[in-house]
Image 1 (cartoon, rainbow over the protein chains, first blue to last red):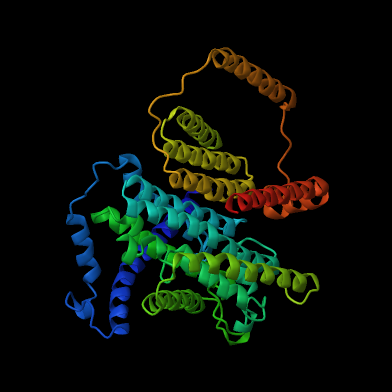
Image 2: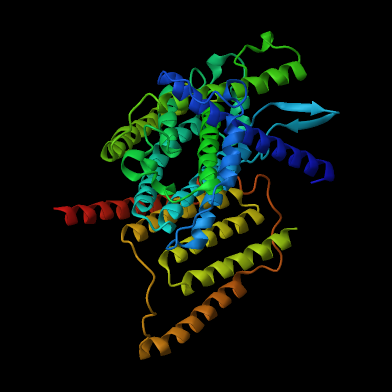
Length: 350
Length: 165
C-alpha cells in the first residue's frame, strides 16, 4: 500500500466516522421530536431552531455528570463494557459501500472503507462481538436488574442471529458472492433488479431480516434487555454520564449498520433504481445522486425504527422466544430452501 | 509488517491463555478466552486466510463463548475462594503429561514443517476457493462431520427433554 492510499483510507475512515457520529446526534433529536409527534406532544423545541441544538445540550450534560462506579462492581469490565459496545458497532460499518467508485484527479476510489472478499462475514463478526458489551455490563454492575438484562440480551441476540444470517445466506446464494460492493453492483439498473424484487425474489427474506434486525439492535418491540417497566433500564441501569451515553451511541450506530446492511443486500445499496439510459454520464452529478440515494434510504429506515418503537407495545419474553424460534427460524429456513431451488433451476441468480 | 503483527498477536495469545487458566473468576477467564479466540482469528488474517479468520470470530468468539458466558452468569458462579488442593497423583502426573504433550506437539511440528512454503495461489483464503476444496476433495469428510454434528445436536435435545419430564 502506498502513501497516497493510506491517506485516502484514513480520510474515508474520518469521513464515515464523523458522518456516523453526526447522524447519532441528529437521531437523538429525531427520536424525541418524532415520538412527541406520535404522542401528540411538542417534544424538545427550546434549544436552537426547532430544538435542533438539543443534542449539543445533551452532550454537555452527559460530560458534566458524575461518573458513578458502584462499590461492588467489577471495575475493569464495568469500565470496558461501554467501549466494547461502541467499537464493534463502528467496525461493522467499514464494509458498507456508501457510494460508487469515483475518479478524483485520475485516481479510482471506491466509496467503501474495507472492500473485503468476505465483507458480509466481517459485518456479522463485528455485530456478533457487540453482545459482549451488554453481557459484561449486566454482569459487572452487580445488580439484579442489570444481570437479568444482560442474560436476556445474550439469549435474544443468539436466537435472532439465526434467522438474520439465514436470510442473508439466501441473498448470498442469489448473488454468489460475499463481497458487498459486488452485491450492490449486481443490482444496477431499474429498481426491479433489486434483490428484494426481480433480482432475487427476497421479499420474505427482507421482512425476516428487518424483524431480526430490530431484535439484534434491542429496539422496541424487542427491547427486553432494557425493558423500563420491569428492569429499570436493564443492562445499563447502573451507568451514568458518558458511559451511559456510549451505550446509546452504540444502539444508534447498530441501527444504522443494520439498515445499511439491509439496503446493501436487498434494496440496491447506493443504486438509484433507474434504468441505465436515464442516468447522466458518470461524473459528480451521478455520483452525488447515488450517495444521496444511499442517504435517503438510510433516513427512511431510521424513521421506520423510530416509528415502530413509538407505535408498538413491547413483546413478552416468551412471545419473543416463540416468535424467534417457531416463527422466524422456520420461515427463514423455508425461504432459504425455496431460494436454493430457484437458483439451481436458474430462475434467479446473477 | 507481518512479522510485527505476528509477534503482537502471539504475545496477546499467550498472555490471554495464561489469564484463562490462572484467573479465579470464571467470567474473567471466559472473557480472556474470547480475547484469545479473536487473537487466533488475527493470526489467520496475517496468514491471508481471511475466510477462516472471520468464521473463527463469528462461530467461536461470537456464538460459543457468548453461550459459555450465558451459562456462567445463569448459574451465577462467583470467584473461587481458594484453589482446589492438588492430590499426590495430580502433582506427579501433571508435569509428566505436560512434558509428553510438549514432546508430541514438538515432534509433529518438527516433522511437518516444510523448509519452504509454497507460493500463494490465486484467490487463496477466499470463500470461493475454500468452498471448492470442501465440496470436491474433502467432500466425504465434510459430510461425515456434518452428520456428526447432527447426531450431537439430537443427543443434546434428547438429554434436555428427559430432564424436563
